[in-house]
Image (cartoon, rainbow, N blue to C red):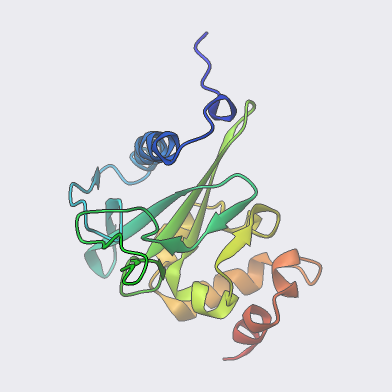
Length: 186
């Protein structure tokens, strides 16, 4: 049996990058079982990692997905690593940090791996502005571990209806007041 323990890889940003890239391929492999025409994006300055072809009654469209390694939470922040277009001067540090939104990707896919299982959390970026946080605890993200999130990620009214049917009043996600407020409006 081959085991892969990411807990054993700690330390440098380089190690984190290796884990991140491997998680992108794991997510891609899992996605391809439901969305066979999915691919890794080979554009290093892109704000998304994967492209997913979605076909439904309205036609074919492409979903841009950002993959995030999730330990205790799923981060919505990107651009924190260096690159060719970043300045490393303490007076003019040209940081590229941003919070994911609909202009950068359509869905943030958090991948949480434990020795027992791998769980994907697919959070539509249109919800991030209503969550009003830079990350979301995986304890509050259970409703997003559903393939249906890919199909609904850019359909706000349908997504809202779906979530209303899935969330109970006791769901920890509803403790986020801005999200609960968005969900309650028609």
